[in-house]
Amino acid sequence: MKKEHVLRCQFSAWYPLFRSLTIKSVILPLPQNVKDYLLDDGTLVVSGREDPPTCSQPDSDDEAEEIQAPEFPEFTTKVQEAINSLGGSVFPKLNWSAPRDAYWIAMNSSLKCKTLSDIFLLFKSSDFITRDFTQPFIHCTDDSPDPCIEYELVLRKWCELIPGAEFRCFVKENKLIGISQRDYTQYYDHISKQKEEICRCIQDFFKKHIQYKFLDEDFVFDVYRDSRGKVWLIDFNPFGEVTDSLLFTWEELISGRNLKGDFSEGEGLEQDSPAFRCTNSEVTVQPSPYLSYRLPKDFVDLSTGEDAHKLIDFLKLKRNQQEDD
Image 1 (spheres, one colour):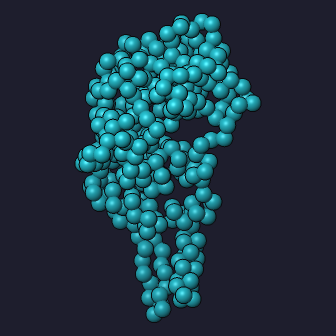
Image 2 (image 1 turned 120 degrees about the horizontal axis):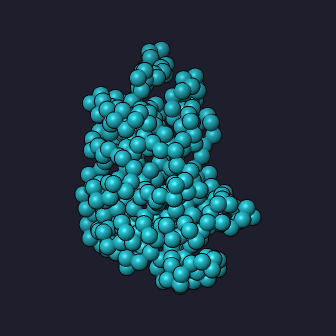
Image 3 (image 1 turned 30 degrees about the vertical axis):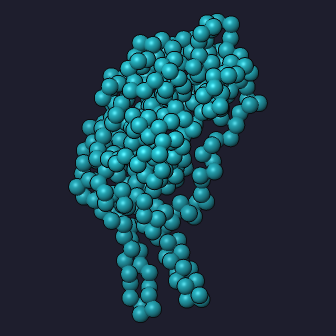
């Protein structure tokens, strides 16, 4: 995987080519001061609120020092206009990643956002977003200087997608070699019963709309199959370790060996059809890969500023520790 392959999977690089196949979205340039704020570990309260919470930390002279997150009025207005144009609720992401590892911190335990403060809360809590900023070319094999990246906030119209209808597809040399159930932590009876039909629908979609049209010959793309059987494009990802291989391993995908070895694809699939993997029974259900990113509720209250008393207690504790030192 080379850096150019990563660049071609940026949302703004592929969205104009496949706009009619995917969810309506708006792309906004991310100002440098917003990027700096998102990467600032020291900011405890979330910017973008209509009534930003503030609190005071008494100092040794009994004076109050106000703590308040920075505000971005012009950017906030642009974001809210975009959200309104998309129906009032959006799914946010950066050039590559969405803050899927931070859904637990939101009040609704979802990635559904209605305001910039909702987006900031998710972004500031997400390791995936931090990686987009700090290590976009991790696992790349070329030694060339890192290209300059223009960071973007991507707002996608919110759609209630059923996790059991999402699939990840792996393409090597413009051939669809593997399809994996996206939410492999759960068993979905309909996938096991319909896998031949699902596989054929996705393969037909690939041949008609994706094959030879994407900018690379090796890539990964995600799709959603709705209740009518229609397939929608969700995203593109680089063909390499930076992308979760789900029920495959990257050794299998790169070498092409054992792709169909231990998984039954059913007698209805053709010999040259892609390998199709799904969770075959409740016995093989696995824990969510995002569980390790969760924090105790007290940490959540501190990060959002929802409980000012906890924040004040935390600041007093830090001051006492500094005095003891």
